[in-house]
Length: 281
Image 1 (cartoon, rainbow, N blue to C red):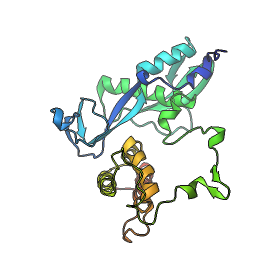
Image 2: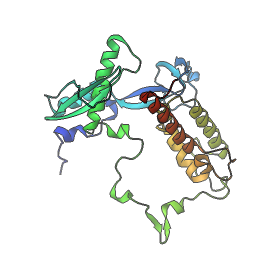
Image 3: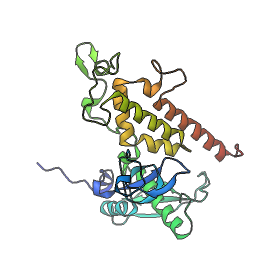
Image 4: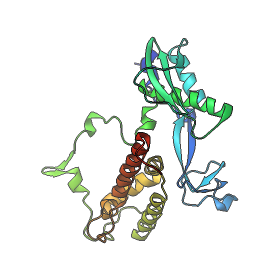
């Protein structure tokens, strides 16, 4: 029996196909030097440890975030509702849009609000960026591309909820507890983490990237990469102190997950103070 095709607002929530997803380069540092994003072995300027090489010219090193562009989103909106529409929105109670714009997006006779900004662009490019960003933001309120916005697993299967039992009295968390000596029982023979020293080297690289972050979006960009997620998985098995400190790490080492969380809290707090007019810098 074939699966019934979704239409209307239900179609808007369907995941986008790989060919509909674009890559947005996000330099790890605000003062990153621009170069061609290709491996040095192929004539570019990007460090060889990067996961993606887009061939573009931008700040390096950088991560490449998945996003749905204006054309792909417009195509999906037309499939959902050929009469979809948007218009600028000014309502009492909405925050000052600054250099951006609030919009109302209407799909299948349902209207929701979104916000778009230009990220430092000017002129006609800024106007196009504001519209496209506003449409993506408003479409997310309908459920479009939520899997790309979310940093984890948005929906778990019923079989994945909770900690499954591996044998009587033992949870999955207990079953994968790291060995006392992390060099023993190493189970990553076919990956970039095949030895403890390689895991340590990647930990130091990620720590350096976090130290170079200037706002919370940079932190989110690093933690959204495949490299970060795989590091967290392997370190959680063999070296959990790399993630949240503790023995056998030095007292002044908080762990990378703890550092990322603390950086986001700091950056968001500073930004909130600036928006409220409390900060002078």
